[in-house]
Image (cartoon, rainbow, N blue to C red; front, side):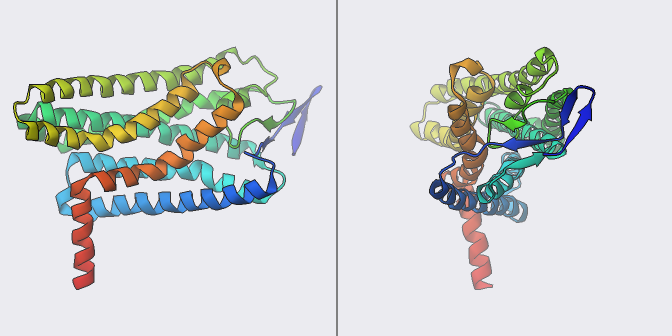
Length: 313
């Protein structure tokens, strides 16, 4: 890898990423599997965005949030998967200094946006079930725009906190012990004092996880209390069914990011981190459109109407 000489040190200008496996046969299998997942992710999330855009019956806050969740999933997956697929085809998995910075910032940005959007969707369900009569006021277009603004500004600020890793000086080994540029293994390669750069990103990411989990937890506590107070079994079932898709999406997402960003690094191995990262960054963005399309009658109905209109037009 290209390097620059600075005094007695050689400054690293690029990094080498370690592959998920060195087995040639397994690399081919993983290439095919991840390529399929990548295509399904793009197709599923693009279809979700387009369907919500063209179907007037889906022009409600919950589905606008869902379209932004799909957009975040596309960005999140695209930050990692293309480079990972290329690395399965080459022997030396190199990435430039700038490319590494872009990859870290883009994954953090879209991951943070997803956290805030999932929290906004939980708040939306809280208002819809617990304050039904005030829903149109509390979830007005202006409120939704403010929530989107918080999500994207929060994503930008969190991603900015990770740029502190690139204020460090890298002069030794340049092999990042991961299949993508991640802040934690990158900081370990630095020749500088890493006490602050190691803490700042973890604190920033941890704070966002705690805040958004708190919003989701409080929303669902109130939702559960409201549902339990309902006299009608049918009403309880209908109210809870509007939340199942969101809960199904939230559980694996927050489970994996808590494992990666909140638990102490000493509590799990690097290989375990890689497996969880694959699920978090590659598999979950594919699952979200499937979860919402298979478990949401309004989306299935809108899709059927659009298909019928195309077929019989």
